[in-house]
Image 1 (cartoon, each protein chain N blue to C red):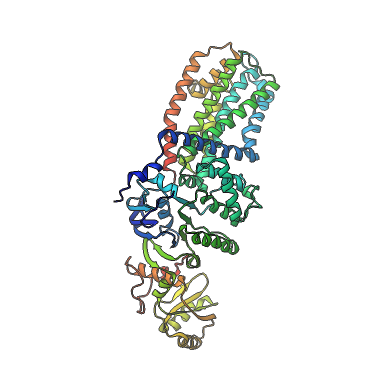
Image 2 (spheres, rainbow over the protein chains, first blue to last red):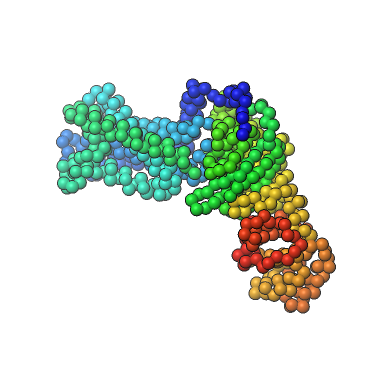
Length: 271
Length: 346
């Protein structure tokens, strides 16, 4: 067998801290690459920015008048739209990873001496940046159509942070589906199948009490309702926040605990 | 990167890999000395890409051993990745990035500093004739330019061993010639190259040694000339425009044939190994075809190409149930099953 002499091997085996530094640099390089692609493709900008803005306008001015809520509808709506937007950011994650897999980009990167974690991490960091930009745009549009944070600055920031972490959790699920399915169109359809019910059958756009009983059972106990409940309480101030926030955090931890390792495994296996 | 490796650049012993029921590699052995261009030739599904994926650490073998520049691909994949470059069938470049950005970011992934990444990118753009297109998004590039950029990307880390997996598949003839020129220049610079291809002329042009893969096995190995020598003598070739008469034409020339005549069902081309009889065979063929009343086009005698070798080898392997081919030249072979006559290397 090939016995490799220690003096030869040692210079090429990096220490743990060097490896951590490289992993960070590689992640940032991949992040940069993904963000350049994002702002150069008009379709991506459309889906991440224009579509949520249209939703705001549609619900604020078309459907909103017909939906009875405590307080004004625009106050009720904005946290819901932001939650949904954060969840829908995951389409980008799943589609991009499936594309990279299909086109051989991931293979190519895996044959290079870069950190193996960087492709997945760089994708998630870039998508989080993208999501945050989208959320801020929606807040601005919300302000233009009458929404106001009424609970002070720190809770408002906490709301945006919660939305972002929630979006990142959904991106983790999407990363797994994107890598496991590996086909752009199937990934897209699959995203619609689970994300539409999950976000619409929740407290995002309508009070759950208006739904039929059997649907309420689902809507009252799914994570999007808790997250949006907590966001609403953080943004508006006059609602109880603790229960929803704790349940949200529990859900988010559970999602990360299950889907982060699954995504990493799917990435390692991806052929 | 400066360490001297005493062994060959690539060493493969008894490599096997199965995907479920499909045995993609059934025990491959290869030795590629430093600085050589090895051509791996075979039809789709022969196991070429599987072998490349194992050698580039993308896939684990089931058994056997693969060593690149003295480093085992299973036990020291990180060390192997620092020595190799891979350029694949599909351009693994990001189309929305400019040529320059693509190369610079890959330089960063090889842990070059920004200035070093920039100068390496500039150097490669220059060397690959992409300077004018450097600041354009890669999606505006022609197929040949994208493939050149892809190859340039695989050279950012100055690899000692370069794996080119079907680098010219899908390119137009002019771009292919351009790629050949680039690959020749790399080889002249001392880079060890393992090149897979479905094109026999490509292997003939570029590779010092050729191995022929079929059904996950190496069925022949040698220089292009040695492989051609295995078929022995000249090849008589002609086309039959009236497809209904191909059978008659084959029957007419069969007595001249050293082996089984090969028929390309798509083009109606018939080729027959005629050994060392040279122009006598040509005259005999004209007489018998005329006597049979078959009209032919482009009847000619030529030196055997790698096509002939490939057909002879794979046809033989199929008949002899996987025994190594090319051993029984000059003797009549049993008739090949119909499917084998259609099997081509493209």
